[in-house]
Image (cartoon, rainbow, N blue to C red):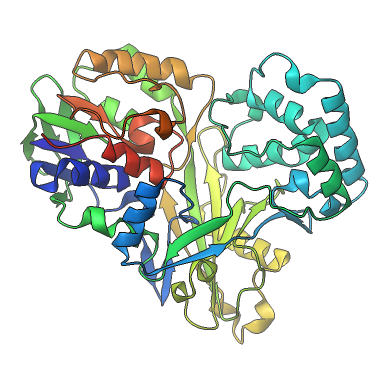
Length: 456
């Protein structure tokens, strides 16, 4: 029997590819799907964030399409940025014509001076702040990505490494920045162009196929992991033996559950950083007021960090004539919240009105502008300078308990094109998913991780 901790997307994918009949998933919650689980209320469908599929992996594209019997929308997206009352196309580094003066000229001058100095060809940057300065020039970097880093990642850019960046932050060509300072470019420079989204049921519907037939024990709150005796204990007094164990729980949680974990390993787990998330879901009785599919907010005096409207994902996500605006507010031990969630929600509603995303004049009764809050205790893995040495300590100890070390297990990203589609079934212990492997994983990564395993 293969025991899988967690019935999120990674856990479901592992079970599906190994064969549901040979797996048991232990899930603490009353529902599966983890970080893509939809919340349906008052005629709205709320995902935990603006989930869309833009994967280039044909296997995942086909799997998701099959899950919804081809009933999905596919469309080009428009992404925007909000900066001190100004709307700027995304990525802002190639849309400087929309940045107000004199900041526009200052950004361009700083960028050109940086490139002319040849800093992009110097030694590798030692942290993300250096990467930003060399990519965009210090002026743009300071006003835009560095500010957003503090809001989204909850760290100073200098405290983060660069290994997670990959192609996920656009490194602009000189001509793009110059031409973008004069007017719109003729082509998009964002890595996301077309996306897919289910017409019904929220993003989790894309995982219906891999979830069908899964053997899930709900309400199974794991309280102890005995890697030597090979069994799991849960809060209800149950004990689950296993031949093989796949963990998708957050790595710091898993380590602290392991009996006999040395102090140095527990200290390494405590050194790993992850942000937390408040999702403020606001509904109002009027149509969408902005064309963007999602919006990045750079103002550091606002809680709002990233915003999207659920009806822009697919019309069926909201009742006709209504808008559902979801706002992401991030915090962590490095950037704690100093207000209650309810106070944050009230502040966010005020911000949405200021930005023109909610129109109070369209409401006969101000109480029609209502919101609810969803808390996500694990949001984004933060790749700071403590991450790699902490992972080395943890993986080395787990290796003595049956974990097979893998190429790139210390790296934030996985290049699936360089790996075999499948690898041997784990003989004793394996990790899977964003939090289990402590990776910068998206949904397609979680599916492909499960695909690596196959039944006997």
